[in-house]
Amino acid sequence: MDSPSTDTLGAALVENGFAPSLGLLDINTSLSVPHGFEMPAPWNLPSRLFKFPIEVCCPEGERPRKLGLRHPLLADHPYVRHVEAALGFEIARDGAPNRHGYSSGPTARWWHAVDLVSAGKWRELLATREFTERACIMNAVTFGCRYSRHDDKKAAGYITTAEAREIMREIGATKPGDRGRTIRSFSAPSVCRQEKGAEHWPINTGRQCAEDAAWGMIFGIEDGWFRYDRSGFLQWSELGCERYAAGESASYTQAIGQTAFAF
Image (tube, rainbow, N blue to C red; front, side, top):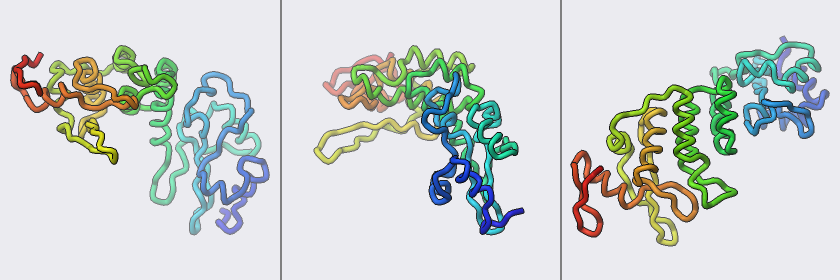
């Protein structure tokens, strides 16, 4: 076994052009697919899991440098095969955890879900769901509803509630029966005042599981509890604040002082 002082694996990575230097390799802790490398579908999707498929564990103490895949199914990735052919050995399929047992694999699976939802590639996400986890997809639904598209400020979000519902249906999510109770399981609305005095009412899903948080976001948008501000960020609406404060009551008092029914 090589000691970190020799680091033959690191030297081989630099020599083969997989990293510009050992210093940058240790900073990046991964091997990235270079620009111009041919990537057929689905590997050409805008997913950081596909762009950075190999994690690198830096040498430490008597532990030598290690390589590992961020997901076992990346064994079929064209760049992974290219690296293995150049190095002459099979890269570990179960990642390259450090001495504390930490691997970036779980984080990379979240990247796959959120990157594809953010890019408007939610159908491609469903087609490649084996590279991520069910909870990651649900959390990506919550994220996709929360933020607007950068290229279209008029759009409701990265995904519409109809698209969010289709994603949840495809992964077998269970829809709660009580819409209001699901939304009220979020943390209570609390105002956040910005430097210029503008008020913002951020949505905190609290300690809800990924499934309930996603459904609460969908229901909140559909029922008007949440609204998008001029910057394209989702926040509590005046109606939502009033409805939340009313609790389980069948009616609530609007800001104008008029009583309204909570349905």
